[in-house]
Length: 298
Image 1 (cartoon, helix red, strand yellow):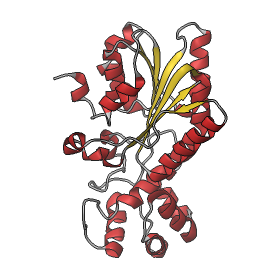
Image 2 (cartoon, one colour):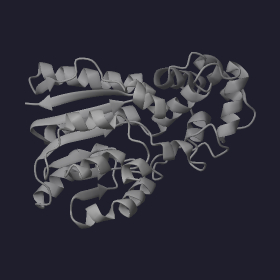
Image 3 (cartoon, one colour):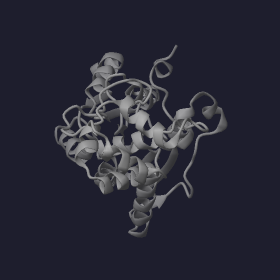
Image 4 (tube, one colour):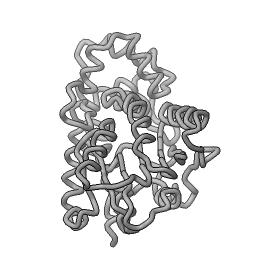
């Protein structure tokens, strides 16, 4: 079995590789390493890769499973948030370690390993502390947000980041509880009490958990911060590929690409976002909300 198959299943891998248009020996950035599926595939096509992740577990996993590429200088793993992309790449260029960046890939999804972790509090399937920090150096947990935000702030959070239609009732119930909500199952039960049992594919707590994860990790703010850095470090004719899973993420990417095109910084190569085909969805339901957009720098 190939390493790519052994790792967390990368979303829209074939489409991503087509748009990356990898040329052997040139440098590429995987700004969201995760479990390394995209990076591994890029390396197999003879790319040189700088990969970022602020999750220590992801970096340690990469050091173990992609060691041969690290030893030969074909892979540089960086344990940093991608909001430090420009500074990090500039330092590597000054040292003569890397040259021009031919393309940058962002997969803004959360890895299956993180979502299914019994200790991290991302999943409503396990009893765990309500944490949700991708980087353990972050100070604020999901439980902290439930404790310290007022009812209006929680309602806005659940609606803006999760599109939760019952945001008002859920926020009110949270602030009316006698005991702080500190575990995943306590939050799940509260949501179920309001929304009832599952109807359809989505668990009733999905949108609430998504909203908290986005807020804890400042995911939308990080996208706003990193996209201008990415266009700066790209070489001429370099491409930026962005895969998003949330309407707010996709809207930010779409608006940014449009503004770049109006400023004559380059051109949008995907008039509409690309989505997974039925074959991929048959074995990877996680991909169902994925949208891929591509921008090429002049």
